[in-house]
Length: 112
Length: 115
Image (tube, rainbow over all chains, first blue to last red; front, side, top):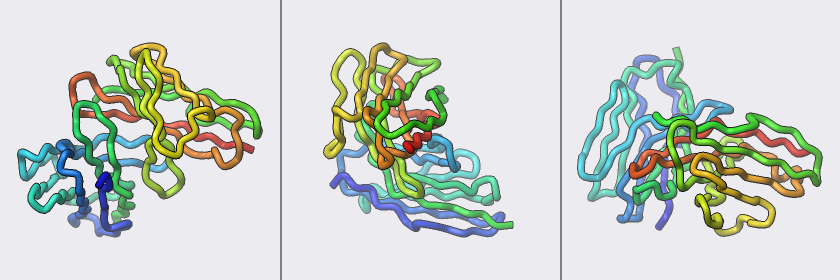
């Protein structure tokens, strides 16, 4: 029940395309869902996050879509750029600074 | 976002020695910090929750006598890998939530190689 399932494991997108990464969770106590971006040899960086009281959140080229009834959420990267090539992790927590449960990660490669 | 630092960024040690890794919150106070380890091309695995002024809480399967955690102040937590062996070689990352908020910020990580 603590798992967060993430797909796909890897993704190749052409420059300018849309990258879509999906996550699903089971624990209905989760109420905060962040996405992290990690470059090789670096720590994860908070990209964008959402709470279940909204269905979508957009920040620049990054959008989270949230489906509470399906217990699914996804990250959309619009106009994908080579600089977006990184590993992306979804996560979930009960909030308030509690521990994060991470997805398995998606390795994104944006090709020219 | 808030800044979390780690020191050292990388360390190489001989088998049987101990290594200390520091995690600092630079511009905020953190009563709680988290320690993770990450193997190549894998996700982050939570090792323990570091609590300021009290004992750390370890995840199932993590040896608390091997991975000593001390959270001596509101801005510093340390992880000591005792009697390190080659299988302890990994990328160790800490994170800290900002007080009263949901956001958690990660340090840059420490690459440990045990020869």
